Image (cartoon, rainbow, N blue to C red; front, side, top):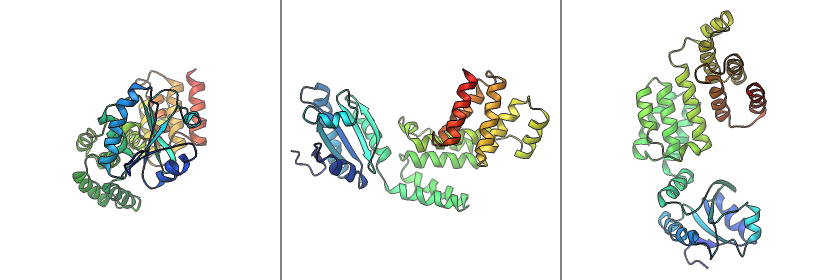
Length: 287
């Protein structure tokens, strides 16, 4: 058995308590390994080192896949090493193979709570309450102290762009890590940012509605109208504009209608009745 307080060996009988329950307090990284697996032996010291370095901000659970075949089957492990990260009782990320330490750090840092997360939460509450200027000021201050917080960086970039500070937004967003776009929340923020850019410089919503009503063939106005609708929370009307573009001209704007629909699906969380319906309509249109 491991002697570190941050590392433990896990069996089928202890998994739910040692991993799922414990992950509600701090993320748990589960390493599925075997004694005969060379890459497993290379990876294990890296994971153990990180567990000690992070001092309880995450826990490492080791599963001997030969001895715990039921767990390997339960979690669909087909190759070794397979490493899965659990948080709040659910799997949130995984990787397969002996990955470099830098990549593992990025994965952990994406999911480990940090002091700046509380500032981000407070800023988003301010924004929801209508104090966008205060929210932006709080995010800028937090970003100065923790520029490596991808969620904070993404929201700061979005707010800067929405305030018309596009160049500053682009500079901030260059600091996102390579793995950031794999995070659902960050992906949604980035998708929203694309619609902010799409609507930038476009006429007001009412003017776009008149233009599209008078000239339904004006796909550029229809594309911008969809962005205005989406940013106003009128999601179905936005999706309908972009689906109409796809039906009218797949080549317009390098398939802009389809790309806008896919970005909107990401923004809307990739699920729900509206997303499912328009995914089906899009599939029927392009096949």
